[in-house]
Length: 330
Image (tube, one colour):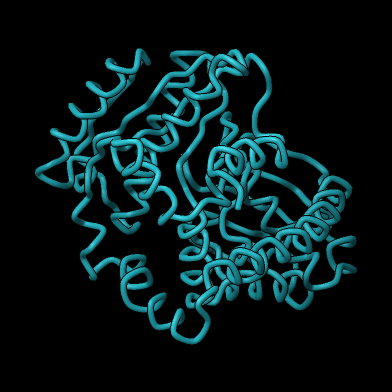
């Protein structure tokens, strides 16, 4: 059996997550996963000649949040690592999206702020194998397509940031055992055991049940995500080439696509071209649902010129020669 340190380094190499002399932000919550991530990057810091800065975001959602921020700062000071932190009352920013999504948005806004402040364009997050399996299950239950069934990727983009997840092949159990063996202390987020959160119900109820049917369910779900990711990458790359061919004009909030060429696309490629266009404008497609894509397909194929589909934060209009996709977010 490979040592956990070997798995960490092999993952970095397999997915080209790290280069020599990289500058790296680490998202550090104070929990076991992020402390494991920090210690393993410090182990290879000299070999890779890395510059490391930790980034901690205090969501102010629990009474322990300030103590956890203090813990992270002290741990970083002891380890000789610079730590940037910020605090926001996440609950007061919640408008329409779930509390979890609002927290994620504010956390990534903070990471982007850290990136601008330091000039570092790459951030490592501590998502591990169990997190990936949970994400795949959540998206299956919500009816996701291929894109969602990939879970999260070892390397992805978020606006100006490259996001890497070096723990994607390491289990939660192995992380906890390593921290115990090395006597590394960490914080416990008690909200992880509250069943009102969807992900927690997956972790605490559904996964234990599935393990009675398949003890290797975590590995099976992660393997499936990998296979789906390979297939989706092919479809996405093909669709992106089509998007570039169809794009006639783009402004800061609008994209015009050739109507005639859109009408000739297969439904799968059509849907992905529309997703790509919206993602180009807004940076995400979180509120775009299958029913919205069906409406746009109907708009293009059946409805008269001048017809409009009004979606959450997006307006789509059928013009004489082009399909206008316009972001309504100012």
